[in-house]
Structures are given as C-alpha cells and as structure tokens.
Picture 1: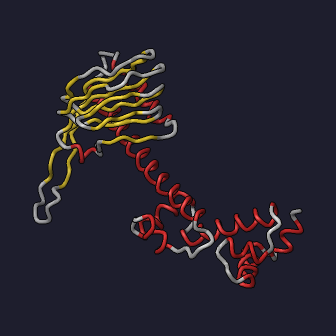
Picture 2: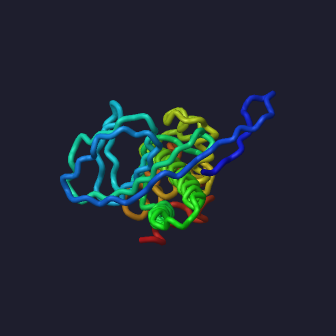
Amino acid sequence: MLMHKMKNPHRYNKTEEICTISFDDCGYIEVPGGFLYKKRFLDKYEILYVTKGCLYFRLGNREIVLLKNSFIILPPYRTIEGFRQSSHVTGFYYVSFTTDNPTCFGVHSGTVETDHSPEVVDTLEELVRQKSDFLLPDFINDALLLTLLGEINRVAAYSGRAEIASRLRQYIEQNIAGSLSADTISDALQYNRDYLCRIVKKQFGVSLRDYIIRCRLDLAKRLLITSNYSVHEIASMVGYPDANLFTKFFSYHTGQSPQSYRYSNV
C-alpha cells in the first residue's frame, strides 16, 4: 500500500489528508471467439485494456463495447455482465486495486479509445511479470500501479485533445469559404475560446489564427495546382470574396503571386 499526502482543499483548513492506494491483482486473458464476459460484482476498481478483438459488457444500465487499444477504469460496487459474445479472438489485461481517494491518484472512470500505447502495454506486462515473483515487496507493484495510472491519464488527456482537434479541423475544412475566427469556431464547437486555442497550440504547434491561415493557404495551393478555377474563384473558395485581398494575402505568406505559384508548379 502506498500513501500520499494531499492538502485539504478548504481555504482555512491547513491540515493534510493521507490518501492510500493498493495493488490487488492483475493478469492477461486471451480467449477464442464466442467468449461472453461472465457476470460478477466488482468490489474494487478495475482497469481493462483490450489488445485483441473487443469486449461486450453491461455496466449498470450502460452497454459498453471496448475495442482494441481501448481501456476503461471500472468503479467498484457495480455489477458487470457480458451482453454479447465476441466473434474473434479476444485478449485483454485486467488490473484491480483499491484506493480511499480516487481523485488524489487521478483515477477517473470512463472509456478511452487510443492508438496503440506501448508505454501502457509495457507497464501492464511488467505488472503481470512482477505478480508471479512472490519474493518482491508489495510496494513494487503499488509503484507500478501508480506509473500505469499516470500513463493512462496522459493517454486519455491526449486522446481527448486529439478528438477536439479533429472536430476543429473538420469544422474549418467545411467552413473555409466563410468567416473563421476563434470566437466563431469556439461558439460552433461549444468550447471555451481560450481552451480551444491552447489545444490547437498543443496539437498543431501554432496559434488558432495561424492554423486557419495554414488551412486557407494549403487549399489555395492545392486548387491552383490541380484545378482550372480562376484566381477569383479560388479566392472566394478559401474565404476571400475580394480577389485583390487574396492575392496580397497569398503573396505575403508565400513570396509569390497566385498566378506565379500556379505557373511554377505546372
């Protein structure tokens, strides 16, 4: 069992709260097609990470399909029950643990779909290996559990940002001919303007304004090279009703006029 000191969030109470977390069990299961998750009651937190196929189970009134490279942290005191058999080979890791303060250790229940996450898989494999070594002290597995939760939180945060960034990119592409700004985009996607700008900076390495400019330029270049549209038509298609303003914009950012860029890339 590991302990962590957390300051009391109440302003006038300076005491510290002791939070504990303890590894319980882990393993890797691989089953053929036709597997149905067995009904059971969870008395601890449990992490499931699917490496092959997918899991179909019901948690309370929710039906959950856990796809390959997805994970979920299941809360305790719930009943989990399979509702559909898998059609292919299914492989998954499980890790159970207890904690008296999940927030303290960044434990958040929910499903996260990711690309393959080697850091998470490596830590899961290490946990399974360490479990079979009965001579190791318990705190080794507790420490690995904390490492795993940290990696899961990092992957979950990145996955969430990536999803928002994908929606933003799609919105810009669909509305590139119109007026685009941080305010109009944040209103359309229903996210705080500053939060959205921070995500763009983290995901694309530029400000939202510069990302919009990049999208307009990329489309303009592509149309100049691959289509027979006039410069006036292309200007309108990338959000510039005034062709003269578009020419100034394009020349400023590329060092060439639209016409010169087209002829030099034919």
